[in-house]
Amino acid sequence: MILSKAAEEKMTRAKYPSLSAHSMAGAAAMMPHVGMNLEHNSKTWTIIKTLASGPFSEVFEAMDADTREHFAMKTEKEVGTIRPVLKLDVFVLRMLQSRNPIGFPRIYDAGRTDNFKYVVMQLVGPDLSKLRRSLPDKKFSLITALRVCAQTLDRIETLHDMGWLCRDIKAPNFAIGLGDEAGIVFMLDFGFARRFIDNNGNHVRPRAAAAILGTIHYAPIASHYGREQSRRDDLESWFYMCVELVAGPLPWSHLDSRRQHQLICECKQFARKGGRHQFLKDCPLEFSDILSMIDSLKYYDRPNYRLISAQIEKAIDRLKLDRYAPFDWQVDNGKILERAAVIGDLGESHLLSVKLREARKKLEATEPIDIST
Ligand SMILES: Nc1ncnc2c1ncn2[C@@H]1O[C@H](COP(=O)(O)OP(=O)(O)OP(=O)(O)O)[C@@H](O)[C@H]1O
Ligand SMILES: [Mg+2]
Image 1 (cartoon, rainbow, N blue to C red):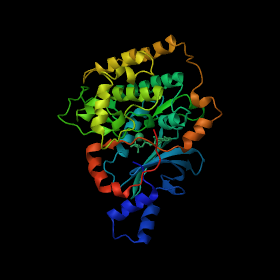
Image 2: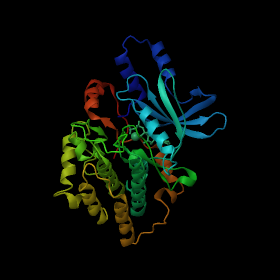
Image 3: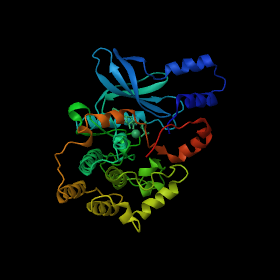
Image 4: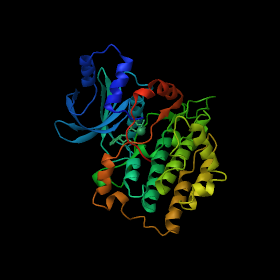
């Protein structure tokens, strides 16, 4: 859900009806905004641009006032956030950073004011959703898509091998690097992560019921039924993302994630049965084998990431694609990157059970902007 400033003001008014226009303006000045200088640990961060904006968190481009280097600053409101996630996001990124793996943004600072929490991290380029929607046919060339699929699978393997699930795999949560790193796909957003290895190194047992979370269009079928997720479920979401990268919008992308989540689940089930051929018609043949591998995984299984990657490599070889070709965003003098920098956000993470309730209360106050598949 994306709120305009006016809608946000309406929400604040609904929550605090006695606020005067003056105190509203005061409250707004305390929230992170373009032009704000944030001082912390003898550093000053100047917020210079909004990169992504949601009702509870915003991502900005910020500058170190001393060095003038640019970073990303993700912020989260202290009040009114249904499920605070920034702390977890920072925890997982810090844990990853200790191993220095490729394709995860580095963290430089984290702190809080009375009104919001923030983390300063490596600035990366546009996310995969914005990139895809910036392309003429809203889809990547096959070789770019397949190489991105392989890289995102590697990131997920790294996260899993450190004992964590993502539970929100989707194109907006991966972005390309900047400059020399434009060929590297970065994994962002660990706000729904969950540790699946306990302190004794054992896989945690499934809970009887788990909240539906993540982003409904990419959610694994297990999540629609309120079942605990495991590594196979991250791969199921990864697979939906890959089909979208290769073939364009998913068959259920036009359905409403709140009102039609059951129908979305049925579409996913149909994509395994009678609808399989239609679902995968624009993907390499190997995608059917990959889907079978993922669907055969049991709750405790470690996916065979190498075997899945090998299927992607097999498709590249069989179709005689040039695996060293530049990526789509590296061949058009930066036009795609330019478009991707201004295109709107798409795809919202849900804690559906909570958000459904919340949405009913607040829907009148919201004015969604943008967004096409
Ligand atoms: N380090 C970064 N550099 C550049 N852009 C970023 C960075 N981190 C996040 N973004 C942008 O901000 C968007 C939202 O970030 P993120 O997914 O971390 O936040 P979120 O509030 O948890 O989003 P959602 O709930 O919609 O998944 C990303 O899709 C990406 O476009
Ligand atoms: Mg996200």
